Image (cartoon, rainbow, N blue to C red; front, top):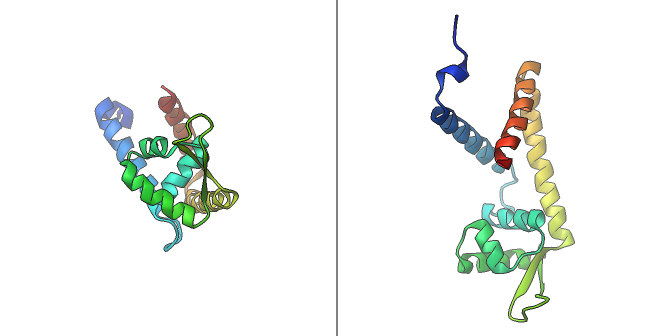
Length: 147
C-alpha cells in the first residue's frame, strides 16, 4: 500500500514546502500589477494603511519593517500622489496620523481587483478536484495563521 504524501514528509519538510510555495505565489501575484505604477514598497505601505487603518509614521515603519527614514520617503511619494494624508495626532501635537485618502482607497481596490483577477484566471485552469483541494488548504492555512 502506497503511503500518502503527508506520510512521506516530516512536519519540517512540509513547512519548507508550504513556505516556499506561498512565497512564490505571493511574489507572482504581486508581479501581476501594471508596470510603472506604485513600487512594491509604496503599495505595501498603502495596503497596511488600508488594512490597519490610520497609523503614525513610526507605527507604519514598524508594520512594514523598515527604518523611519525609509518610511519618510515612501510616505512622501504616496502623499505627492494624493494617496495618503496627514492629520494631527489627537493627543500628541508632535505626531501626525497617516491614512489612505479616497483616491488611495480606490487605487488599493484597483490593485486588489487586478491581483484577484490574475489568480482567478489561473485557478480556473485547474481541475475541480484541484480547486477543492485548494479550498480545503486555504481553510487549513487560515487556522494555522490564527494559531
